[in-house]
Image 1 (tube, helix red, strand yellow):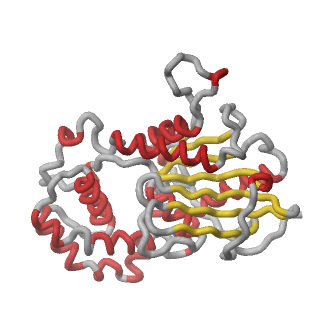
Image 2: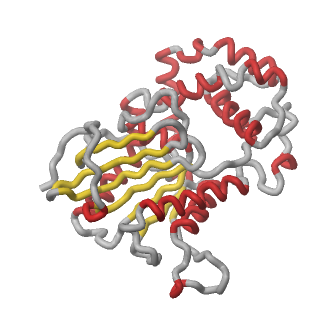
Image 3: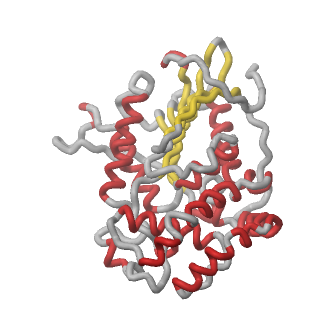
Length: 339
C-alpha cells in the first residue's frame, strides 16, 4: 500500500539511480521572437520583417541550441537510468500546441537521443525522428488553461474582487498614452513585458519612454500576474491542477505496472506552465520568472518500498530546490469543459 500524506518540504538524502523509477520532466521552450500580442501597433517592430527568417513568436537559432543542449544535459543527468537507445516504449513526449513548444521538443529530443549505431539511418546525420503528441488549445486542459472561457471569467472575477487593476492605474495610463492603445487590464502589459524583454535580447532599441516602465514597474506587474493566476482554489484547479493530476495518474499507472517500460514523461510548454505547476505545489518564489530552457524534474523513487518524489528544479536563475513529497497530493479539479 502506498503511503498518503500531504506535501511536505525537506532536504533529503541523495537517492541513487537504483531507487529511481520514473521521471516527469516539464521544460520551457527556447529563446523566441515576440508575437504581435507582445507588441503594440505603433511599434516600429510591428512588422514581421524584423524577425526574419524566423517569424513572429518563433524560436531563434539561440533558442533551438538552448533546448538541444538541455536534452544533452538531461541525457547526462540520467545516463545511469535512461537507456541510450531510443524505443517507443521508453518515453512519452507531449507538447503544447504552440509551434515554438513543438520545435523545442524536437530539438530537446535530438539532444536527449542521438541515434545509436543500429538506429543511424543516414551516415553523418546525428538525428533520428522521435514522435510526440499534442492537443489543440481549446481541448488541452493540462497545458492551456488561459484559452478557457471558464478560466478567463474566473480570473477576471478574482482580479475585480481584489481591485488589482487600481494598483497599476498609473502604469496602465502611461501605456495607453504612449502606445495609443487602451490598456485597461493586466493581460496586455503582462505580454508587453515579455515583448520588451525579447526585443532587448535581440538587441533592438526600445523607445525612450519604455525605460520609464521597463523593466520596472512592468516586471512587478508580471510577477503579480504569476501570483494571481493561481490566486484562488478555482484558479489553481485550472492552472496547474490538471497537469499535476495527469502526472499523478501516470505515476499511479507506473507504480501499478501498467506503464512498466516507461521511464520518462516529457512535457514541452511555456513559462506559465512551470509557474502554475510550481505554485500549485507552493514552491515558486514570488520574484521568479522561469527563463528559457528552465525545467522541473519530478523523480519518482522507490526507497524501502515507499514511493515518493525527489524534485530538482532548475529555473536558469538563482534558485535550486530539492524537495520530497509522498504520493499523493490532495487537490480539487475543475469540472468545467473548456471547448
